[in-house]
Image 1 (tube, helix red, strand yellow):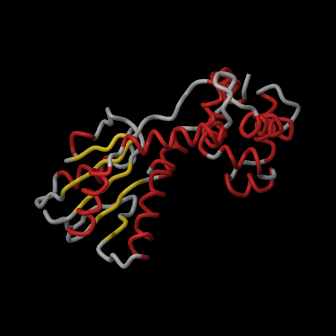
Image 2 (cartoon, rainbow, N blue to C red):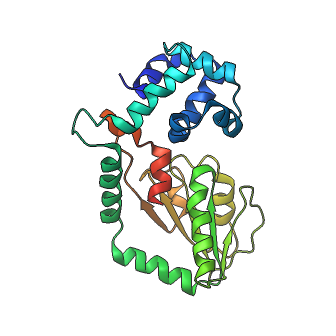
Length: 234
């Protein structure tokens, strides 16, 4: 049984802190597999005793034993179902993404970037990373009309000639206020939602929705986590 299956089986017995650790491991698996416990404590703000208790709750003698097994699950063991390694599964998923987004759609978005009066980018948590990346990429090539909105964006002077591009992997919980204000603005900009959920709760508020495929969820393919794939695909 791999670590993720084990954690799922024990989830009902987790304390509040255990759930926080569990969610952190899902979002940042490489950190927990590779970093020293001191570095993990520094980056993720958990205490050593809480990490040790979490490992023991899963049946390990301590965090070091947990990390050893987790590293093997994450990096060494191929999927029992298809014999593919984790990098091969990543590569397959990225190729699927490339087939999902045709060249004409990419060309259309690129054209909107270049012709809009202002491009507003928005995303929260890991979904903010691609927005950060695009802003820097545009600056490098000399495009100055791109603006990254803060997580608590309120009054934005949208115009019809603008573009609003929102990255939201699944629920849209953290971006609902910003999206609502955009959709209700007097001069509503052209809006695009980039997501991993074709049934995203906020999809009806956008002019265009780009839905990438979900991360696989069987066998060791579960090691490609939805949050990780959200960043990779964006």
